[in-house]
Image (cartoon, rainbow, N blue to C red; front, side, top):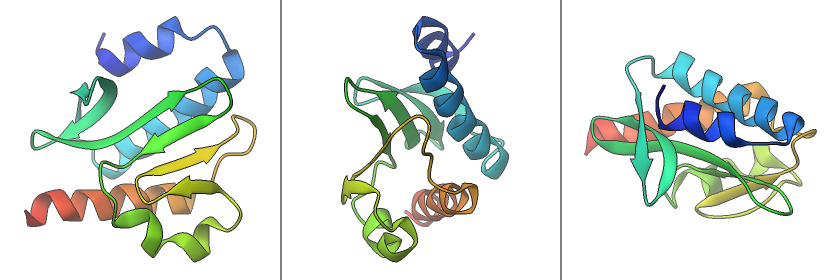
Length: 116
């Protein structure tokens, strides 16, 4: 098991676990060479040694962290009413952002990593 798998196994909220696993699965499809690891003390998918994406449960929502403050502002129109900041996207386990938007977030982060 990897760090993400361990984190998912510890979640007692089935809805949150399934939602988080779904986001990680999309990220793994987009960047199949990404590996499980930890960045900023969060379970993450890591690409070329840098954080690709982390998704975690908080008391009030799920948080998606693309390890970049440039991606989410660019996608603000596509994210509509989802709450967030430049480095965090917040959503409920039963109201995930659309898969195509999640793919775009991961694609943009991969491009940032590979361009650096």
